[in-house]
Length: 371
Image 1 (cartoon, rainbow, N blue to C red):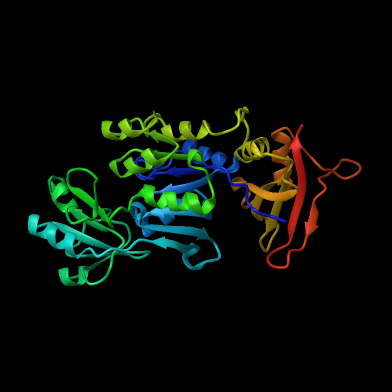
Image 2: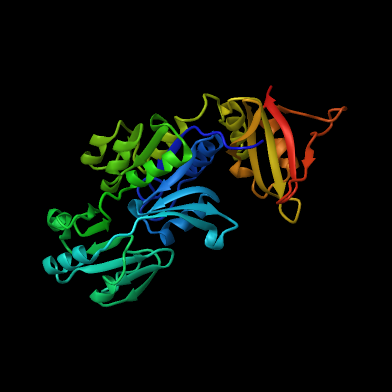
């Protein structure tokens, strides 16, 4: 019998939280995300970015499974390496954007308006500057922009935020991102609304939720979470709704927040792989074993720690650093982490057990535990 240990959902904003304005992700942040995954929580990227904009970020972080909330909550996908494009749609919130598009052009005739095309890019009344929107752009008439339900609309114009209240009268959810940018989703659609649906789907208790963010589109998510954490550079209105404030982006505040979720063990000096193994074994609620599988060669394409709960083996956490290494490298990392594992009678090598599932590649399993 197999399954997943369900315990915690951790929602992470991308821009200004994980990623700096120059597009970099600090090595410290990358390591902390991998360690948090190894501890068992469900790590969810929750971003205002479109699907086309967030998928490359997930890839850079090595996230090949789990969930992503994008477009300020209008879309949730499940990452899946076997699916076309590497994802499957879970939930999409569409709305009729006609009223808000026509209203914004009445108020700001020179505004640039973009309607999201999920997974591809945007239909725009006028081209946006490079980098302002993720993905491709196709110029369209206002009638075409209004012709079908949308997930999200972006509006750009100098000082357009002054129209915030008037645009909200259309019933849409309008979020300010600076004085010259507004994001629009359907009524009641926010990161928090999507995360709540996901929390219920994953059967995670409300108190076992964490959200980290830095902008006004994170307000609802920080208030929703059992533990809402604001970045230190966030504006006062964002810090005000959070339960606590971590460091700034330059101080790698998200890494500090994630490290607080880890078991109290010292991983200083350990390789990324050894640290992930140590965290996974220490945080598991029962006895543990490694489960790995190969691609066409000797290198691993997947590794997980499973744990025994109520007489059943359940998936506890992935070991992200095991991708592309060998089984020998994995046991060497376990030695570095001070972990013990089942060996042959002479104790010369690890005693891996091969299993043959009905579908998929052969699996190898190895009991592992703290010394």
